[in-house]
Length: 195
Image (cartoon, rainbow, N blue to C red; front, side):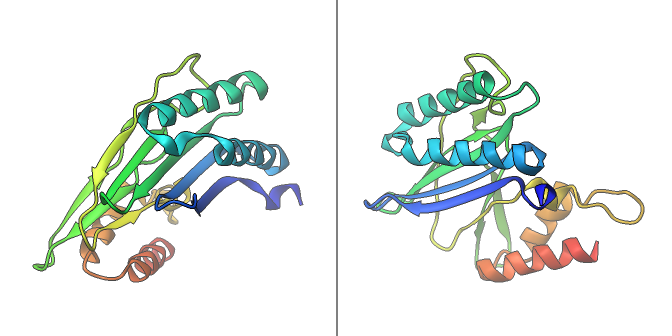
């Protein structure tokens, strides 16, 4: 049973005002130890004031990093992308703490798409003492899609031990940018499995 749990996690919730929180992370390692750290992080995220603005979000990121660095074993660290969307301004506020960069895909009617990687933030949590984090913001156009993914997508390997990689992921997203979010997700998974 210890290998049936792990360190990948996500959370989506509405705080009760108009903002929606979107969280995706990955704790190093596998098994029960990684899942315990996931519980610690999710509890800290839900009880933090990080949705109150940029300084709070940046400070909470530093606090989470220090929590992991000082309260877990040295080999435990975590990547984390945590964001909140404000629908009244169509703005996504985020901190990327060493996670694979999510992508905002804005399609136009001609079948072309602009893909923006969300990289602003800082290092993985739990490694660097007093790490500094910066909140990024992006205005999301109508019909844009946010693609969040974990390393299981880009590190999937074929029989030649080649990884699927971000370039293939971007190609799939670009080719399907005018489709629904569900269709984009399904096509990514289909292409990864075929690979």
